[in-house]
Image (cartoon, rainbow, N blue to C red; front, top):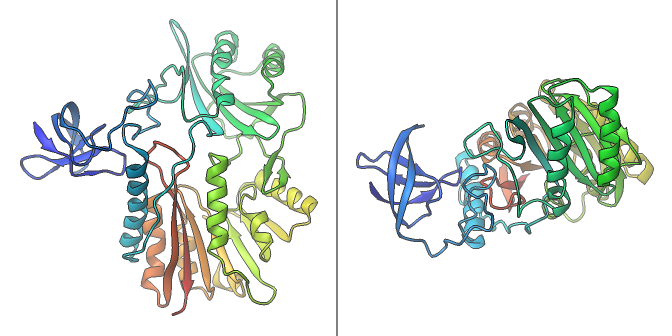
Length: 425
């Protein structure tokens, strides 16, 4: 079938129409291109289609920099130049705001992060007849492919792929399936290994030798699928991550922003969403504070009441803020089950929230009717952003003052946003 690609979909696929006007989703095709496709299985309200030929290529088409592109499930748009990717991601944020009820909000193009800067990776491990596979999941599959290179990852993480493959090949605790989560901290790589077999004393000795040989201060372990907190299997020195100049001791597998540049962009956008001076002795309420990526910078503008559901993150944040003398009170609270009520928000000069991918629908419904003058929402999911901001559009007096798109997941379909809402004329 010969079709013209009309747009990029949310997953980065080209979108065309068949003869009946139904959408065709064509991976690796770009807007404006005339292409040959082979329609396939049903997908949503349309059909998937395989790209079989390009008759008229887009002027934005470029050569993908990674030999794994097309096989790897992580990157979606390596075949598109940076400028149109930035515009596409900004348009996705603007569309989310429009669906929420805030139309015609300008969103600046999302500048892509530099290659080779991603500092966290969750690598899948699989034992096969010909050896151990280590890598990201293949496109459209739950199984990994064997990674040889990656232009997205920090080279220090990529350098661990081959040693991890050799480790898993001889580790009795690894039987068939597992994973290796690596956080690149200021103290070095921090490894959380998950295996489908128990960890024996001999395994611990093997992990200690592996850590020493590869400059890894701490190796934690947990059973694949278990919900228990990981245990420390080997540790040769202290671990620390420095957030806005403050050292924090993270738990194994702790969440961090994916790149230093992405973190800096989000922090800057959040601070820009606040007035230069907040009146009186301002109190800022921060929800889903995590380890404190935003907390310490916010504490320079006012006293921060930080809420977070993970006990280990609250403890790390409280300790780090205390040592730094920051004006922070960290409280553990499950914000999904127990969102803050209007009375608890009374008197806050601003509320900042950075919820997980699923968003914060219950909390946003409360915030929209609470007597707070300003809300800054950090989003990693345009669908959740559209849903969560809809109550603000329906409530009287709220407006979007500023919306910034952030692209720290280079070449992926993911986009983040910082949206500053204010109440008043």
